[in-house]
Image (tube, rainbow, N blue to C red; front, side, top):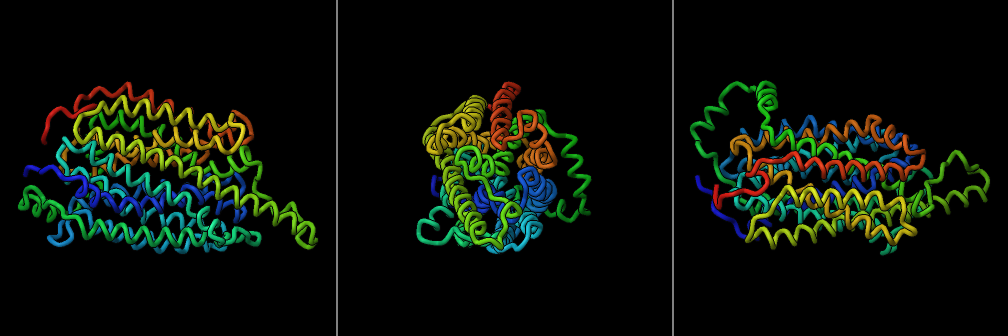
Amino acid sequence: MEKRKLSFWEIWNMSFGFLGIQFGMALTGGFMSRIFQTLGAEIDEIPILWVAAPLTGLIVQPIIGYMSDRTWSPRWGRRRPYFLIGAVLSSIALFIMPHSPSLWIAAGFLWILDASINISMEPFRALVADKLPNSQRSYGFVIQTLIIGVGTWIASSLPWMVSALGVSDKADPGVIPMSVKVAFSIGAFVFLISILYTVFTTKEYPPKDMEEFKKEKARKNRFIPDIIENIGNMPLIMKKLGLVQFFSWFAFFTMWGLANPALTEHVFQTPVPIEANFDMSISAQKEAFDIANTAFQKSSNLVGSYMGVYGLSSMVFALILVLYTSKRRINRKLVHMFSLILGGIGFISMYFIPSPEYLIVSFTLIGFSWGSILSMPYAMLSSSVNPEKMGVIMGIFNMFIVIPQIIAALGGINFISGLLGEEAINAMIVAGLSLIIAGLCNFLITDKNAISYLTEES
C-alpha cells in the first residue's frame, strides 16, 4: 500500500502525545536527583539510584515493540493502545512520585514511572515510520523533536514557575517542597491529556497483508527467539548508529543524574546541606539548615529552568529543520555530527563559566545535540530497515540507549569523573567528551539511504 504524504497538522497530531511524554521525562531528568538529595542521597549514590530507568527500558521497549507489531484493532489501531496504557500508568506515578517519604520508595516509583513512559514512548517512534513515506521521515521525526523541545522547555521550568507564583520552596528536612509536588501534578495532567489528543485525532494504516498478519499472529508466540534472531541479523547501519547512540546517551544520562548537584555546587555555590552536620535541637543550627536548604532548593529550581533552555534551543533547531526538510533533503550524517560536537562543547563550558547566567549559552549548545539525537538517528535507521518489523527494530535499537545508561549508573560516571577529581562538576566534562566522541563516530556511517533518502516515495 502506497503511503500518502501527510500535512503538517496531521503529523503534528500524531506526534502531539510526545508533549506529555517529554513532560514526564523532563521532570524526572531535571528534578529526580534533587528529590534523591532532599531525601538524603550522597552525590556518589545518585547514579545507582537512576539504574532502574535504563534497566526498565532494556526490558520493556523490545517487548512493547514486538507486541505492537502483532497488534491490530479496527478501532484502536496498532500503536495507540500502548500510548493510552502507558499514559494512565505514567500519570499516576508522576502524581505520587514527589510524595515519597523515603529514598528507596522514590527510587521504586522512578522504576514504575520509567516502565510506564517506555510503554507509551516506543510505539511513537514506530508510528512515524508506519504512517509516513520515506521522503517524509526526516520531516516527521523533526516535528516530533519540535514538540519534545516544547515539552522539555516548559516542564523543566515548572518548579520555578510554580515558586514564582507563590508556592513555597521551604520544607522540613527530608521533605520535598510543595513547589515540586505541584509541578509534578501539572505534569501528570499534561501527560494524560496530550496522549489522549493523539489517540483520538490519529488513524493508523492496517497491516499491508491482513491474511499474512493473521497467520503471523496465530503462530505460537516466539518472542525470545524472534528478538534473538533480529539482534543476530542486525543490519550494519544499525550497529554503526548504535555506537553513536552509546556515547550520546552516556552523556545525557550523566547530565540528568548529576547536573543538579554539579551546578548547585560549582556554579551557584549552594550545595545541598547535610542534616547530620547540624544539631536540630539548637534553634540557631536549625535556622542555618533551613536557610541553606532553601537556597539549595531555589538554586535547583533555577538549574531546572536553565536546563529548559536545551529544550527551547532543540525546538528552534527542529523548527529550522522542519522548514528546510519540508521541501529539501538534508545530509543527516553531517547535521548529526556537528550538532553532537556543539553539545559536547556546551557541557565542557560549564566548568569555566563565571556566573550562572552563562548557563544559557551552555544549554543552548546542548539543545542542538538533543534536537538531533531525537530525530536524525531514527530517520537514518527507518530508511534502512524492514518496515514490517519497525516496532521490534525500534525496540532493539533502543538497547543502544539504555545499555550506556546502565554502564553509567553502575559506576561508569563515578569512575571516569573521579579520574579528573572529586568535584561533581567533573561529570559534566565527562558528558562533553562523550558527546564529542559520539559526533566523530558519525564518520563510520556510509549508507546513502541513511545519510539522505534518495527517492521521493517509498
